[in-house]
Image 1 (tube, rainbow, N blue to C red):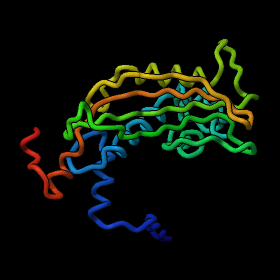
Image 2 (cartoon, one colour):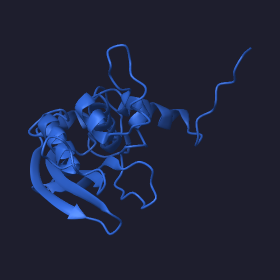
Image 3 (cartoon, helix red, strand yellow):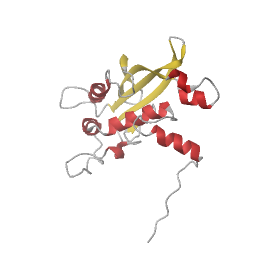
Length: 204
């Protein structure tokens, strides 16, 4: 029996398919979307971290482990871990979340070639799930694991620096911690050259 390969949705041009593929190469190559490259690398780091997966405490996903007793990180994407910011609904069956966002904030020191980026993390736990046996609230434990991975790292090329770290509460019984990193990155000089501006080679 043969199975048809499902066509991806939405349908994209070969050019945009190449841009996305290059953005998902662990930070290697030219002609990519820098926001998606950041998000891809962040998602990979989060879903590769067993401390994070176990702390998310999704009992239905914890039934499925590999031969070494490790959880499958891919199963947590868009279930417990999201690459955009959200607050879960009151009726959500999943009670613990991580979500993140990447924003271009401004030109760096007025220099059009460099951009200041913010990376926002939000760790979320329902009030019924906040308590852990380690004496630290679950949303704070998730945040501590992420900060241990990301503080001052140069995974994106330049180091990232934490600039804020705040606990919050939502109206539907969820507590969360939101913390923000800053970094500096080139202002997509490949697209600058491709779309008719200053030659890319001048800024290398």
